[in-house]
Length: 285
Image (tube, rainbow, N blue to C red; front, top):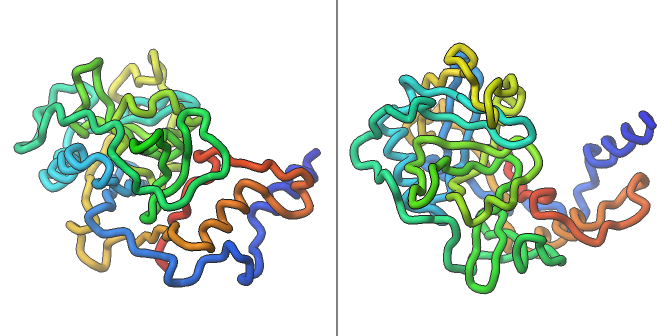
């Protein structure tokens, strides 16, 4: 059994020839704008980077940028919730810290948006929507008719909120660290995706209280800074690229995810879950 599992891992991780129809060209990799990258630094020195999605939640993302510019997360905030197989959540655990000036306390419910911005689709219907696919600029999407939304997949970042009419300001955020809770789709604003360093969140000790909240302050992981890459000196800015989805090579990549090849995969699946086929993002070479 161990040998079979090892073979499966190697089949997925082994490099492939550069002549496959699904292989990207250099021009297919596009730089993520600096003002879409938000770098959080924890007290232990570990960092995680969130790519923001201003097209899909413009007011919430504007709030997040305002909070970052005001250095709001630098004092009195932490990762204060870690629920097993669900989410890691951060911000002000007391929910008493005043928001930065010009932050909209309850933005519009940016849970879905008018489309389409989709340029490529999975071949099978999504269990939670009529279809699932991809925007040109590297975002997973699900949709019904002319409405689209960002799905709750691993690493996606949402805005924590109270019961309606609260929509959450963006000061309290979470990321999915377990099985994709797609029932949250269209009920919470999704504002981005962790593109680097999620291991520093998913590996934290599990919460000791209900719903994974830490019972004591000492259990929390303090945040010491949050900076937009555009605010950092050029030499210190993280550089990431998304893969453009509006070409035949990406279409071939979708087919390769829906029908895994190689000696281990003897039966093609014939389809894929959007959360098992997230669009590629990489550090710039």
